[in-house]
Length: 414
Image (cartoon, rainbow, N blue to C red; front, side, top):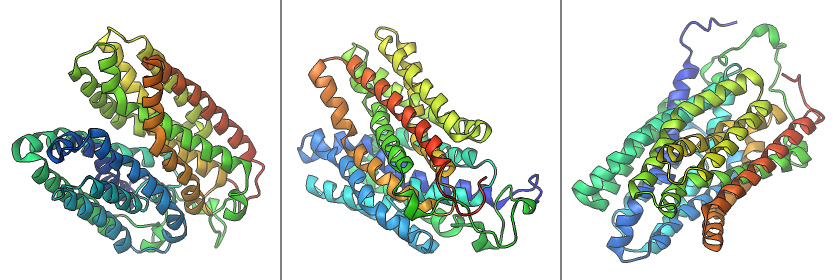
């Protein structure tokens, strides 16, 4: 077994994955929201019109994912780098346009590119590179991306104030490309075998000569009840995690100052940095299904705190921070559960098809939450909806874990 006290290239892959996630996923789905208001005002359109960019991004991801499952294993680094670069080129083009329709088309193209640089690719790569501490590695990659986003978000606001949203958006796209493209081209390798290496934690005694990756074949996995349950869990988690975006609306609804809502998002980002590796560590320590359900309980607690936080800013911040666990579980949580249930044999392809429903659901998550608030006039209904959704997600994951033990594997189970 390789000495784990030595530096292993797998940890450099974690860094590269974090850079890739930041320069595509978190920058172009989260931080870019800072540009929506000034861009809408400049072009004379409603905020809701330009924010449709986000809906089209999610739909673009869903449209691209079927191709990801079939292509990522054979795609060279320059291919992933190209998909990362295309996203930045599109965002750079948006800095020159006066057409809101181009934001919609751009969002769809960014989403298609993002399908090759987001959760499926990163989770598959890190599952290939780590036989031990896989959950921690995936969580750490997302945490690194959160650090970059937490830095870039206020910087983007400062740039908008200093140079206007157009020039700021162009610089924003260049920074994203400088993170993602070199990472994809020079650091991230699909598997250790392509570098003539073994995964981190590899133990020769645990592997038979010439043994292949073990798991459920794609053809059997995709027709299983476990697959359907985990696809539902991923889609429902995507919807529930959208709550983070609406903290400013909640803050205003209970009479907090506008700065409170903005700070709730900042607190969630700060918690995200610590929660990602912590959730990953607990998955490695206690198992993916048990850890997932336990952290979902924290998600329920966060909603209860938020329901009781009217008039108490500290509770609002605490609820927002703990609520970020739903977003964390959307990444490292679901990815680890899928690996536990289906193994690594056809993991990338299985997870890609599973994720299609998740990103399609993400496109309507905001609509569901805003509609609930508009109809009831209170965010309590939204929080209760999230609690009910979390309970359903947890049940689906538990049942999928049990059913997964009965699926036919090729190779030895871990």
